[in-house]
Length: 485
Image 1 (cartoon, one colour):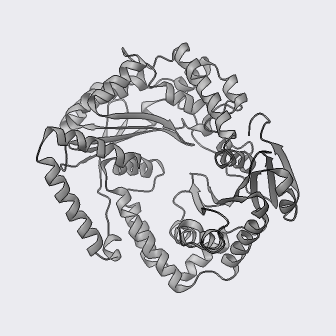
Image 2 (image 1 turned 90 degrees about the vertical axis):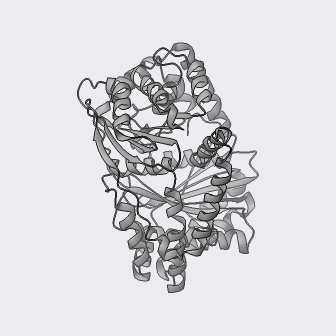
């Protein structure tokens, strides 16, 4: 959604420059809508992600390039391996995101305010954020402003200021953010779940940090993390839009080509993910909570695993769409909640399956009982042929539109390259979805829907939900007022 909002913003800027743009833009949109609804789903499954051209800068930075003449817009994505939250020092949760945010707080010859003003003046966007395995830089602008935006982005990565005053402001803001998260059980449960499931594994690091970890982080920690892990030879970049290759290479060499790697390459590998043995049940007491929020998690699959297409169809049926089993039973039929869902998340070493929802404290027992029954039903009975056909069409219909923009293509290129999946991965993935069988989907259900080995975390009023959880097994209790997650 952020990508689409940014392109709409740039389109508005273009409209001011060209009085005919609005007319032709509407006409193009109308044609697209007509084609989208007239063509059958099987035609959509034939979507092909364009192959980018691979370029290499003199400093080893890899760039994937695709020329798109449609509009005078350019988007880029920049991924640096080994810089995500999983590579923070122990007990310094939040370091990776804090480092990424500090990149825009003064760099090169520009202060934080000057950087923000320059980006706003161009009607552009520039952002850096950390995920678990990498940090991601993203930028969008009109083609005429690309040179300036690349210079600013390069300065942020090559010569960030990391000033004490900006650091203190950001540190304080994040500590306040953690307090706000704990006051919102719907947000807090996600972080309590991460700690309960991953424990000391690097993927259990809390991206926003904790009250304890944020107070421990010093400016020297940020500078050391940056110096060790931010490197051009560990960076993948993708540029998509209306910019000629020769011109782009000159702009990139003049900006990012100045970035030099020093010292040995740090490790960017992660250990195998933990696998729950038996039931781990954690209750976080929030005495003023009127509703209880839960997340139930179990092992999933690694990124690019052969089970992925079948798992996607299975998850769509069980909890991945509005008409899924889980949402139908908990929301539509019984009115226990306004939302219930499940998801699959994958990384290089593995992944997790998660189911989540919320309800009144005194209705949690019923909700969890239904959830457990649906997990059992998925494993034992599986899904019918018509259900599988419906989910298959749903996935095929939803997927292609997510790769239509310059920004989404650029993002796809860096992620596919990072995970080593090949740029034809989505073509192969959709082809497998199109041919998936009921037997494959039900096999995925047996493998991925948990029975006895899972982690369940509930945030709610303990005195009202404790007995419901005791019927599932032993409980470990925490207080939401305790430091950390």
